[in-house]
Image 1 (cartoon, rainbow, N blue to C red):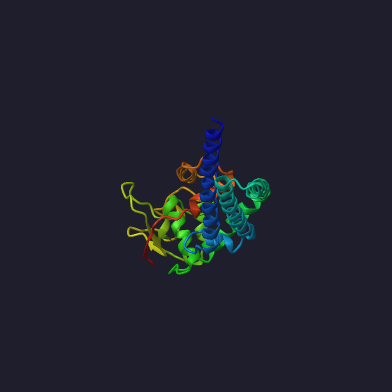
Image 2 (spheres, rainbow, N blue to C red):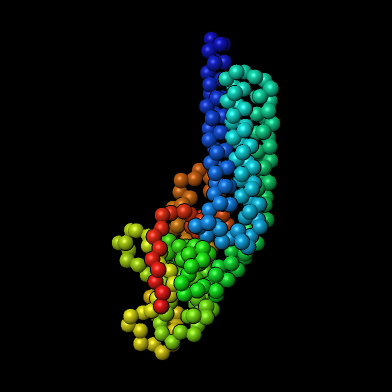
Length: 260
């Protein structure tokens, strides 16, 4: 009876550590993705936020330690090696400390990251070119098309762009354009578009056929996208992390070049 309980406990501990190993691989992969992916808006934020890069390295470190811990735990449980089981509990303590550290860093840098995000977006909007050829511009087009929003705090943010500011026709960013609700495929346009039935003598944001929703934190469409993205998570992330999810998500996209 006692031997049977020991065997069941041993294999239960093996499965538990195998899950830890898989979790570590996921965390490690996420950290590598943040640093390596150049096709999503996360790459734009890295140019202005050192905190994001530090967070990516923390993910990589925690993921690597978790994988090592899971591996040692599996070997120790199967072979009943006390030394490996001891290392397992040491690594478990280190991961707990790392999680607390990351939580504290996120909490105290939330406002700073929000401000850096806003400054980065406004810089992209102000310097947005007609062809939208840079990765920063294409990433922001993707954000506006996916979230169905326009501008950071208002669509009028785009009037800071020299092309739109000096235009005498109704010209607007193509990625802000309203799409039909039945269109399920995400098609991201880039550049600037002109309204076909424009009769205005000046370019006013009120005349633009764009989404009225803004892309900054607090928008209704952004919040619904956050809930969709975070729906499968067992733990609800901090509010500033949830505000990054829709702009950092990586979905298949199709870019159509449209320019005035």
